[in-house]
Length: 229
Picture 1 (cartoon, helix red, strand yellow):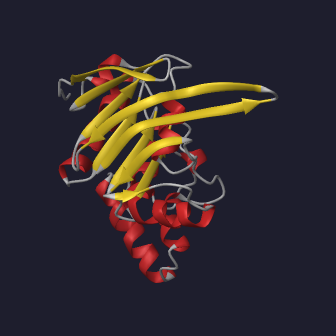
Picture 2: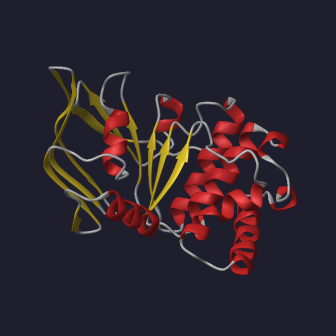
């Protein structure tokens, strides 16, 4: 599903060049649930941006579903994101003036799906995450765990092949974090590849494999330890 060969990425600030990714080799199989870990400055956020087609890379090869991702225009990248990828963020990124159902339905709006179909599907996906009864509540009326469930339903509704989750439990208490990761595992069992960025060891142990970054390179990989509560 995802293959990186010698991926390099640098940023230029003034006359200075900062190498962030220094030759990343990585392969994520279809249907895997993988966590990416690393200290601040290790390159994990930059790597996630490259994987999610939110930023270009300088050198190397990135293959997504067998297709080379290289020199994409903003429009091409957006089309590929809509077709293949779903995103879940630590800060939820919900629109405050739209209720839960409207937030979940948003990706289908950009795919020009009819309002009636969007509304039906939004209710279906809210039910999948246990929030059907909260469909007409605004984000301000939801707990952190409920907001993240809405965000997961929004990521799922377009039927992506891969979900990228950036610190999805960072703003949640420990019990809610376990519930959210177990929800990701249920998503993963449906055949969707899940890639989590986290700094929490107990969260990474709930994934199939842990990829550790250090100073722009992969330090090591290890099997996770699937647990539940």
